[in-house]
Length: 307
Image (cartoon, rainbow, N blue to C red; front, side, top):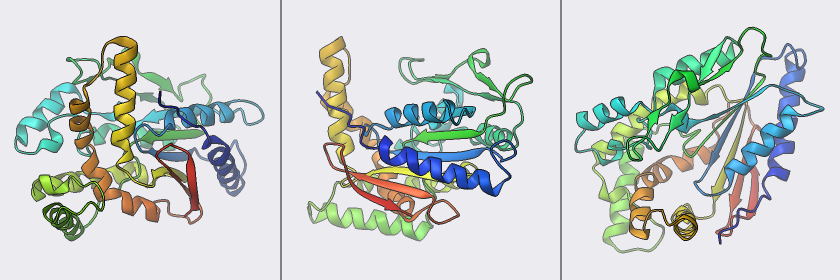
């Protein structure tokens, strides 16, 4: 059975508490300080859910007692109808035939939500149900969204925004083309340097996703701190997802086959290949506010880098 090792919280939580205090001190104290935005990117299966839960709990309890909102980028996916329309309008682009890659999120909704949270205005946190439409997913009815900053409620002071592609930023078209050409070279030469999927995709499809990613800066530019749980080898995500699905099949009798898992992860992996390097360089405006943990294939932290 795969074990999620939480050696990350003891590193990440003190880091965030330190940056939060600096933010509060620079803005007149905990009450007058504007909301503190934390971005959290974790490669799928690395254990970021555990970290997010403990971080939120720490901030909500004494002595901090702060109102915290935890957002997932998954809750910003397009509605089912809009996703179907996107797929139909780009029938040859395999990257947008289903939810997942940059371009399949509702950026208008994201912009209005983050603007409201930043200005401490009333807001509704959307929720997404991945089980709808036989697993294709759909946004939940507004009646099930979470109300924050309403009259009589304490204003949200910390926003934790987590997801597999949180913090990814667009490259230049030339940079995308260079990565695509290198992937083709590695594949054609049968070099086993690292797993690569870009070669199998059309360049115009990668450029489309890259162009769409520019709109995600409306969220990324608000980060006051960033946690990036990286891996020595990004392709560990295949191993970890295979483990998870094998356990699910054993426990429930349901779950993807190994072949289906590989196809599923293949839908996300191009973004890891394209955008991870830029994230590793740092996306927070002020230096020293991004923490990068690099884990081994056993999910244990090997390296710690502050950017």
